Image 1 (cartoon, rainbow, N blue to C red):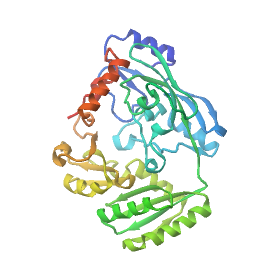
Image 2: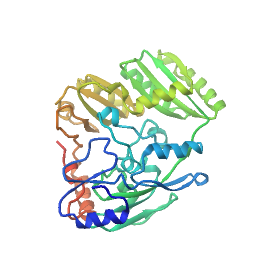
Image 3: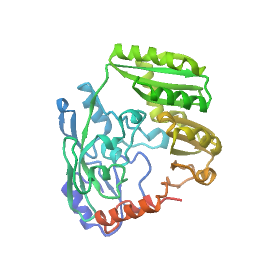
Image 4: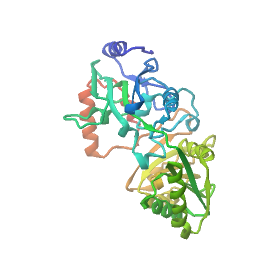
Length: 370
């Protein structure tokens, strides 16, 4: 079933007598069992004020439509949401509601924050069919539940998003990427840490061992970028890597490929995503025995391509991080979420009981933990 209005969605939820599988663009393969309820019909930008850096859109609005509107005004989504389709082998259209429901954030996250940090307000329908609005069009403190932050990353377990209000940012005048070649994983992590501690405002830091290169992105006014790139080259000269600077156009392609984990596209195997301390990332990658690896967020995000059916969590044991099986090679296998810590699980269960007392929303999908 596809709904085309918030009222129609509320009525469908009130009438439901069995679990529902909420879907937007269905690009990530996260939809679980239950009657499919598509929100893709809730589409359109309802308000855009470039001068106020604010945009309001219905949840089913394609991300590409929003990016086109922003580009026409020299603006962008600062958190650089990933496009999962090629990695997951899926079609469909990424939607803005899906981006915020999963808190999808790309390489620029380490500099500007996650998707949830740009979400100003939400409208959604809870598990009893009530329409709820929270937040607004400006950043402000709230009392009680901060539903805006709760909905971001909730994977559709608390309610069905119908509308989002978000902050956007101007597109910088230019960007450039510094490339260090020839560093091993520990040396690359150390170089990225050095760059991130510097005052040169790095907005992307990643390492691709397969290509033997470490990349650092700087953005802003042309004269500022040129000065900061020069200083960063001096700072990193002692790392021992060969240094090259890419201009804006080729670096945009490079960062899009990193954002979407292009090195893993079309390659067989399970794909795991690890959030970890950057200093622990090389040791975790080595311990995993992965067939391929890719470091983003200066090492805080580690992508691993594993042999099908590998239990990565058992192989790594206890560590200070979070692992998610994002793509499973086995036919019919579903992605698995990291089990929540007991205290977090109790809090989560309490929230779901409050907003979805009948257990309609994606509950089985999130139970895919091991």
